[in-house]
Length: 159
Image 1 (cartoon, rainbow, N blue to C red):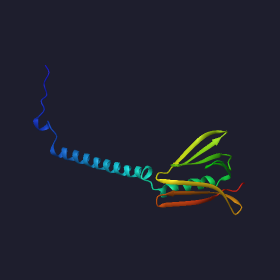
Image 2: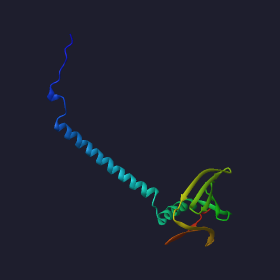
Image 3: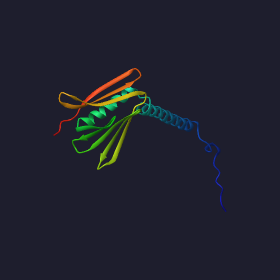
Image 4: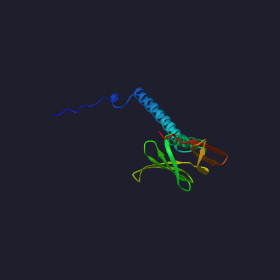
């Protein structure tokens, strides 16, 4: 014959102390998750949205400086499209569009890598090849509402 085990009534539920501890741990966890979500939204907004033309042009200038300081030659392919020959044998096509600049790396006649540098709220991007002191240089001008930035990049020496 099986004996039925009856539980005492005072052990059938959680105590008040157990409930308070559980709710406190749950509340602390939810506050931490809420703070992390708010922080991640701010980081995403700062990185992907709401950039000013000043920030976007600074990123563009830094990237072009890195590319052009290692360049050997630059030729204009068509109006506003330039081919940059680098010291390590790469060819990069620099093309200005209405909403940013596209850099396409070419190897053996094929595009192997493409990088877009988008620029919102920009009215005009002017690029031209020029000469300065006997060296070739590349001038870029970014114009936006209430903002105008330009920079001249000297091409690298042929080694």
